[in-house]
Length: 121
Length: 229
Image 1 (tube, chains in turn purple, red):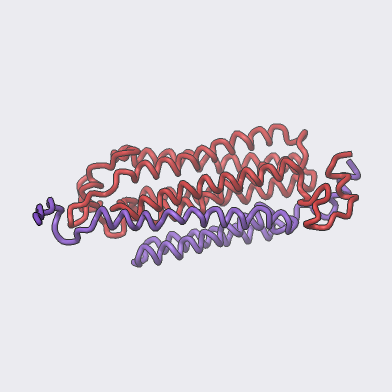
Image 2 (image 1 turned 90 degrees about the horizontal axis):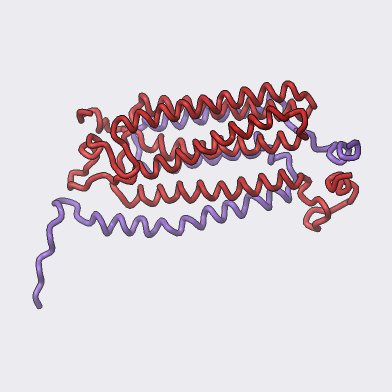
């Protein structure tokens, strides 16, 4: 057990309570910004980009400090994070189809849909 | 002597393998791998939701009260629970098991508050008539476009699936933390830390669910105010 403690001697749970409280304050503050933004008039796309940006910052704070990854060995970070990001980004391959099917369903802009006239050639 | 202890005596260079290349125990590595796979589950669900939302007329029905107030307080509960959990893990690393147990119990209280508030919030929506495959009549009236296209009834399906799966994770986490709190004297510090990893992950997922499901569905135009419930 002593040898175990020695082997881990340089990796006790790093970070002070003061640091963790400051991270919590940041997380709460960013959440309040999100709620504030919810009531600002802006396009959905701009709102989405800002909200996702804030969420990624919050996720990074949680992973780095609360989940302690910042204090782990670089090899662990490089094993876990890049492949996760790449896999999530690969799922974006579906979005062009989403936008396409929106266009197929709602082509009409002015009048309600009517049956197309029969064209005889 | 454990593998971890022996590994400490080998001067293994990063990327050259060695007996202990990540300098974490196998259980902790296992939890990290579970977290990565669970991240992909939630990512797929949120992207599926985004797919449907982008290809349909989508209702944005949430009023400030109760939906946004409740979800904001729930967010606060989860963030605070993460802070108490990190205090618990910190106490555990110093060998103060009694203090660690108290902080873990505080985390469970915040988690339980989250689940209760969330269930009340669900009840509000179900009382209005929201179901997985049906919208309340008032929502259909309010969000049908001027071209006569009705809003997608899949709003409920995505909402209940994503928030439900997240709530399931929180509930599972409360049970998990209960077991850890009960057995904290027998467990190694790393086992407490692993339960902390799971709990923070549940918090992390909510950091995406809250803006994408709640904030982006605020009833900005007051559509529902003009329709009788």
